[in-house]
Length: 385
Ligand code: SF4
Ligand code: SF4
Image (tube, rainbow, N blue to C red; front, side, top):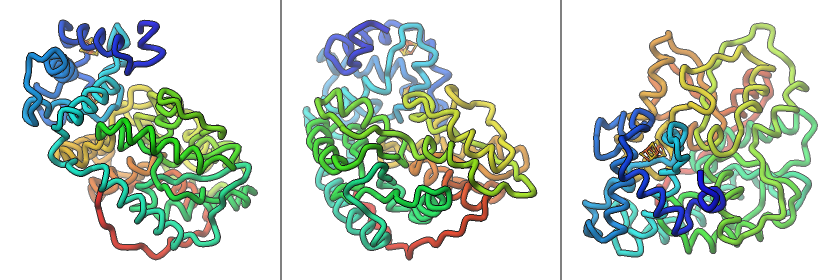
């Protein structure tokens, strides 16, 4: 990886260099892309997506929805980077290309009006978390909990489980961050709305001002806060960690079940390849269960299809990726799959075969340690963004 690429993979020089390298590459990473493998489409291999972005950049292809379609066939999972001798970052460069597509007036058709939809969802989810978890929110503290928008929307029981676990291990002072935002903004980057992302990041930073440390339930927003906020000039006072990082040292205080169940752990790609959250969820789970590994695990994990707004732009391919991920467990006779990101939980749950139970890390730990929790009454889903 070159020096400017390491500093800022979005800088004009870094983007141009990576696009040129990929354009003339003999497709060394093609096997690593779950989007092209799951869809069977050659136009979705990393080299072709990057070549298309280069042709658009150089004015050799028109800025139309059809020509820019491959830019959206990426979850940002970073698996291609693992097999690239240049350390190229298609997952990040394609975000820049999406921003250029939006500037040229060709957002993905499924993301039309996305900024307004994002705002409406934020308002709805912020109100929802206040209703569901009244009395369990705070604007300041040593440690705050940011569940993430998908958890508030579709995984309220997982939030309740996390709060119950934290209380059980003696961290009863931990509250949900009381904020007018529910999401830390990664979807705005993925939708190509970089200016709105910067503005939103500033507002989130203001909401976190009263906390020393914040535990995140979403792997992509953890990455966005740690890396992309600073790249956009937004500084956070709070240290940002994953919920798994908080639960791992505390797990030894939980009662160990007499019969230990076997559970698989699915590494969210943003945790495994951007955030270095690999060992902590394993440590937490190992206290309570026998840990089983997928064939593709840790820094070689396979994406569940939830990143990059793929469930919005190419939902059938996203679902196919989740099914593909769980096929190994189904073929081994089924079992429980645990993951540590709200978006991965949702994607894997909605695509799980009957023999596979998917659980968020907090819920799995609560169940395995017989920690009681009550899921709040769910509020009907309204899927604006
Ligand atoms: S990311 Fe690396 S290996 Fe993949 S196409 Fe680009 S240059 Fe080739
Ligand atoms: S970041 Fe992941 S989804 Fe995107 S091109 Fe690379 S391997 Fe494919």
